[in-house]
Image 1 (cartoon, rainbow, N blue to C red):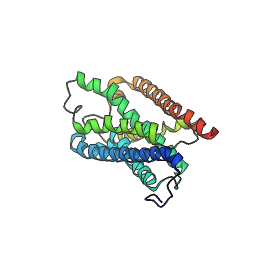
Image 2: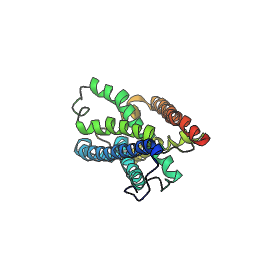
Image 3: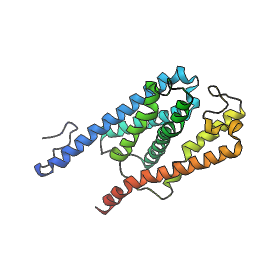
Image 4: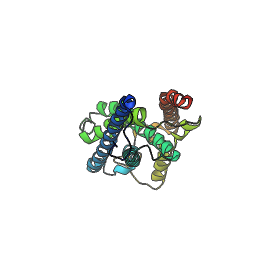
Length: 233
């Protein structure tokens, strides 16, 4: 007898691992579809609220995750017979770091500041919850439990800095071109050099960069033991 994809069923003694792998694949597909749908709805619904949605790191990181998840969903559906290119695995890592930064900065920096200012309507809007909380959590689940294991070089955490710091360059270009964000010259209060001064903004950027670097290290640390076990076996 053969499976639906034409491959033969495994022997009885290997049926449990086979079923576990099938269950893992189904859960992975469901999780990826949820990320794609949540990111799409969140980005779409935030358009009238954010005025210029794609000027913000939140929507950019959600868009990156949406696109990379569509690619990985394709590979997941095609099965293990198709190897995911290494460059896509690294890009997925970069997107996971970026979307996790979105969630952490929202929860521990932006949300407290908005609550203190009394602006809770935007904070608890369902689309805001999708892009800032649900998509980051599901993306971490995907990285931790469904992403393929691959050899991670020591310089991989530095690649996690590329998307956030590319966004800082994007913000700098917008400031030079006098492109205003919603209600202010910069997208986030901790980048407002007119209020905080350039040195405090520089300190904020350095601290944020260090936090992103250690976040990238943690994501690698979570998977590294299983990578080593796979190599040994």
